[in-house]
Amino acid sequence: MKQGTKKRGQKAVIQRNSYTAEHREKARRYYLMGLNLQEISKLLNGISVRTIEKWQLKEKWTALREAEPIKKQVWQLQQAGKSYSEIAGLLKINRVTVWRWLKQVKETEPNK
Image (cartoon, rainbow, N blue to C red; front, side, top):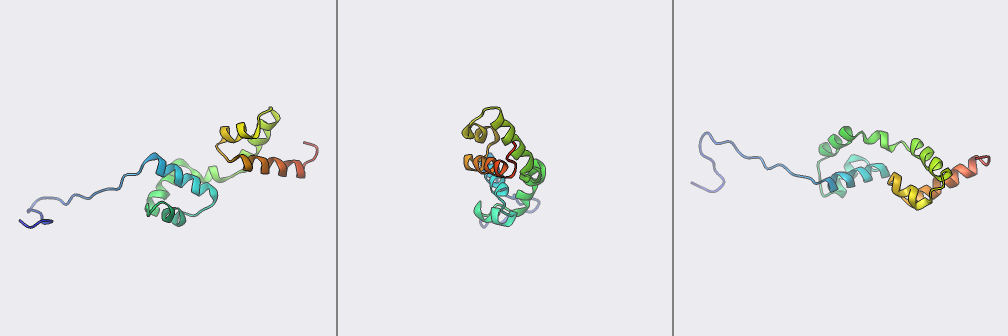
C-alpha cells in the first residue's frame, strides 16, 4: 500500500494544534495593548483568529480592556501607601502605566 493512503473504512486522523497557557497569556496581553485579533494571530505565528476569538469570549477580555476600574484601583492602592512597583505587580500592569495614570489623576483633580 502506498504511503499516505488509507484502507477502506479507516478515518483520516486530523492533527489538532495544541497551544500552551503561555500562548493564551501572550494573546491576552497583546489584546489588552489594543491589537486586533488578526494582528495577534500574525504575532503568534499564525494561531487562528477563531482560536483567539474563542479565548477572548471565554475569558471575557473585553471587560479587562476597560481601564477605568483599574485606574480607580491604582488610585486606591496609592492612597493605601503602596509603591508604583507594588501596584504594578498586584494589578499585572506596567509600572510606567501606574505612574502615568496617577499623574493624569493628579493633574485633572488637584484636590485628590
